[in-house]
Length: 335
Image (cartoon, rainbow, N blue to C red; front, side, top):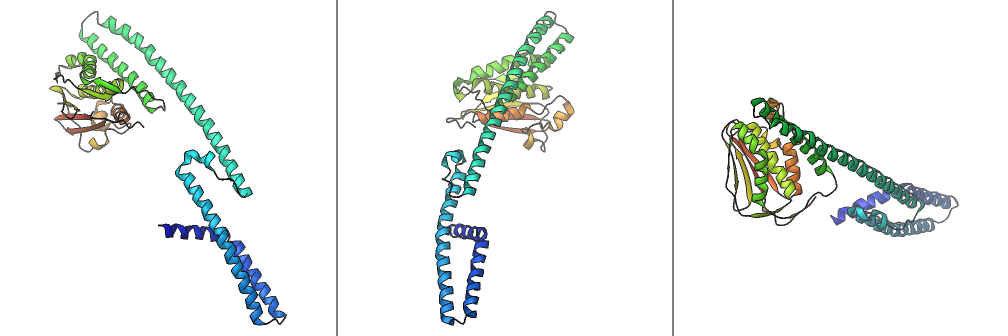
C-alpha cells in the first residue's frame, strides 16, 4: 500500500512538472550538440551532460520529497475536514495562496447558506407548530359537540376528526425528526405508563371497530424518550386498527425488553414487507385503502433510529402483522 502511494505521488509529480523536465533534457541536448559542433572532446561533452543530469536528479528528488510532504499534509486535512480552515499549511506559492483564499471564501458562503437554511427551517417549524396547536382547538370543539349525542353519524364523524388530528401530529413529527435541532429527553421511563397513554388514545377506535385489545402490564423501565416512543407505539396501533377488521391486537414485552405489537389484520404482502419503512411507500394495502400516506412507518423507523431502538416487522398476508421494538438500549448513539 505504501509502495503504491509513493508510486502514485511520483507519477503525479512527474505529470505536474513534465514540461520543466522535458525542457531541461532539450536544453541539455542542445548544449551537448553545440559543444560537439565546436569539436570539443566527446568525453568532456558526456561529462558535462552527465553532471547536468545528476544535478537535475538531485534537484528533482529534493523537490519531490517536499512535494510528497505537502501532499500528505493535505491528505491529513481531508481526513479531518472539520479542521480545514485552521489546519491548512502556510502557502508556499502564489497558486496555493489563491487556492486557500478560495477555500476560505467558499467556507464563508457555505456557512452563510447553512445559517439561512436553518433559519428558514426554524420559521417553517414554528409556523407548523402553531398551526397544529391552533387546528386542535376547533377539533376539540367539534368533538365536544359530536359527543353530546351518540349516533352512528356522530361516531363516524368523531373517527374522521381523530384521523385529521393524527395527520396534523404526523406532519409536525416529520418536521421535528427531519430538523437538526434536538427534541429528545432521554431518561428511564416506565414502559407501562407509555403503553397506557397509547391505549387510552386509541380506546375509542378499538371500541368502534369492536377489536379486542390484550395487554398484561409489566413492571420495567426503559432508557428512551417518552414522547417519541409514544409516537412510535401510536403509529403502530393506528395501523393495527386501520387494517384489522376483526379479532384482536396483542401487546407483549419479552424479558429482553422487546416490545411486540401483534394484530390479526390483513397482513402485509411478502414483496412489500422489505420496503414498509421507506418514505412514501404504501404497498398493496395502502393503495387499496387509499388513505395511506406512506409516512407513518417511515417516521417510526426514523424516530427509532434516533432513539437507538431497533424496529422490525414480521407479517403473513391474511393472518396479521407483528411489530417488534428492541428497547434494551443501554447506551445511546444519537445521530
